[in-house]
Image: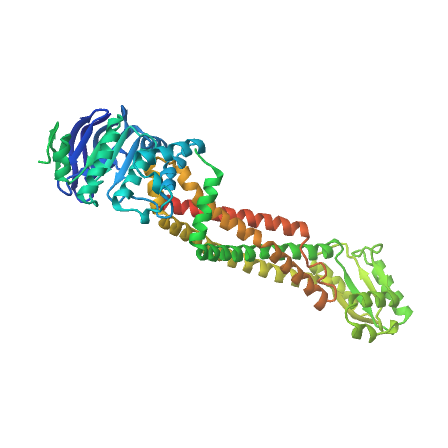
Length: 225
Length: 299
């Protein structure tokens, strides 16, 4: 599903974000990306949905070399990749249902599809009763659920989660991880960057550790360190 | 591309509601710049209209003294007829009675002036059509009659025409220069409006990019906003052109004894200028927002 071959990314001022990283993630895998701040986790994620381009190396997503993708096809790549963030990135002026529907509207899904899929996904994340609430009326955990619903409503092949529990208390984090696990079980590949030792140690999924841009460890059923 | 007109207009109207003062301010500046530019064109059209009437039959007028004798009048006619530079057939004699009627019509809005003269006070005149309409020729011909007995005054219409043309040219040039500067200011304002809109909607734009909205889907509402500003501003200028045109024609009526009559752009020209300004407004909006989008919207 995802393959990196000798991928390097160096920012201005010789700041090395990734150096010669090679790894492969299979369809349906759940992978934790760990490492200290500045180790290259976010760059790794941003390269996968082509928000960044590597300075060298090749990246394949769903069998396609995304380096060869022309600009106008990038949106189509992104429709196959859902993204979740630490700060949720919800639109304050839209309700929960509208936030989720937004992801379908802007890619031109027909209205009847939207009106079917949005309630279904809100049911999945347990937010049906709050469909008409605004983000500011929700707790942090609920907001992250909305964010997950928006990322997953289009049934992407891959879900990229950048520190999704970074702003949440441990109990809420467990709920979010259960939800991501459920989504993973539907066949969606999940790549999650995290600093949360407890979660990684509890879930015992594959762990890829980055250190100063180098791939330091790639361990099946791994722990945080 | 996945456009849904409703979505686009919802985005645009939301953006307008969020920042109405900036939108309105920009709109007013575009409208003023288009108005000034368009007014320059209206003035030019009006001047062309006014001078065209004179150019067709450029003439100078030999006014006789009101008490000139028939012999003197006939002598002038003989001199006009014998001059090969003058088209005798088109040259017309306006007697006291006709002059009185013309005067009454010229000053129909001022009873005091009309009542102050009688038929006997009016100077008879010859309306002369020269073969060559060049101002130097007309002047030379006119000069030949100034010192003839019984002649009160020789007026070459060409002087007035040149004066109108000069005033028109100057006004036109000034309007165009001022309009061009204002247009530049308007473009910068549209650019900044769109920039501000992009900034105020950066979260939406970010989400749209992440979920895979096409580049055009993201760009179009911003472009529509820019074009809308230009279009509305252009549409608003029509009544103002009519005001400018009415002002021009009022100049002719009051001050210049009919020489400025016709200083009015034909309504067809006004509509053409208006349409051109509406299109120019839309173009300015589109161009400025396109530049702002390419610089500030990384899609």
